[in-house]
Picture (cartoon, rainbow, N blue to C red):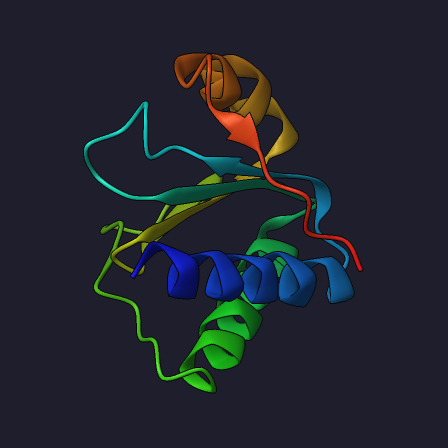
Length: 116
């Protein structure tokens, strides 16, 4: 399944990029996380942008046959977490992203090239 999740992860990164997510980082966390194979961290510019990114991401991945297993509840105005099983996506505002620095929690994870 890792190869399939790699393809889905790239699809997800491209989908949120099309909708103007900023500073998109895609990590292969198979060696640093017991929870998933891949992780995307991206910055949203506002609450409406955060909501739009969440919706567009869900739509794009449903087309691949993948649905969200879990979402953070209650929903935050600053940070959304979408769990697709082998892929976890963090959509955050700039302040939350700087404060929590998720990239540093997965030191040693390899960054995945996703741009075409």
